[in-house]
Length: 312
Image (tube, rainbow, N blue to C red; front, side, top):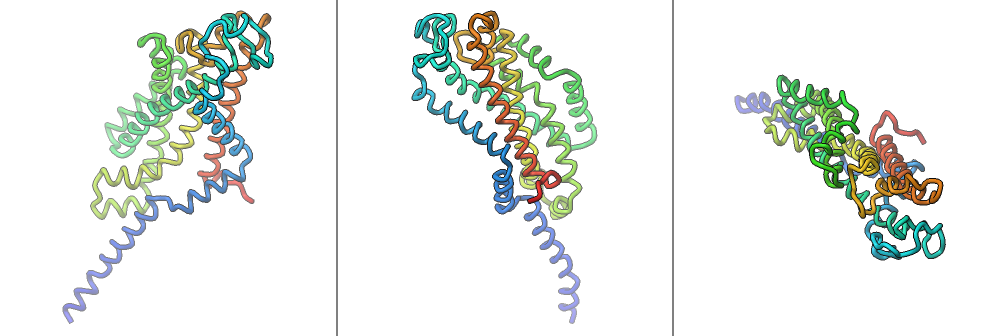
């Protein structure tokens, strides 16, 4: 009898621990079917699929640049100076006789480099700040968020200009500057996600079971913060491309003879009436690329957010 009483007294505790463990596993890690649903939602979104197609086209152009190029993008005298678009030079040539088509295609590699590195910098540092701020709370949260508020009080391009002014004009410094300017967005979004997740039952269950801080952050909170981070990174990719192009246009980013789209706009600025193609084709490349990443980001946001999910 005592043993049965003891068993009945401890069984609720065992049950609670079992249920809590199952809750933490179910809530903390999205099921594969959830990602299948996201992909299905993306397929139904024509804008998202168009954005994905543009993004894949950019990646393919970057990967197969040596195959696509008809001329060396930095070779002067590949054609005559300021030749109009023709079969030999589909996008014409610039004032140095360089093939503009080759420079635009080669610029796709720099575009991916700019976007990937800038997003990696801002996403890594900003997400870490958001995780620490939201999880620690108190004084640490106040200090980090006040620093984020200070950065938010300045336009992103002004922060980028300040960083480039300190580091010096170059493509790499421009990418670092663009990455630093976007840190507050990730910090704010991730902190908000952490604050929400900490109030959920699965987190409280895992915490009551004695899970370590590292496990709570990296096994429970971070996986649930990935969807908003992914959406922000996709949209941030286009912002990084635009900001880097703006810095190159101002002479603070890529330097000649690098085939960067923003630099091409700057080189063709004084020749708009005489050689319209120098600014037109790089400008179209920037616009289409930014549009593609924005469409893909909007589609991901809609697919990952149940509140914005389409019906039917």
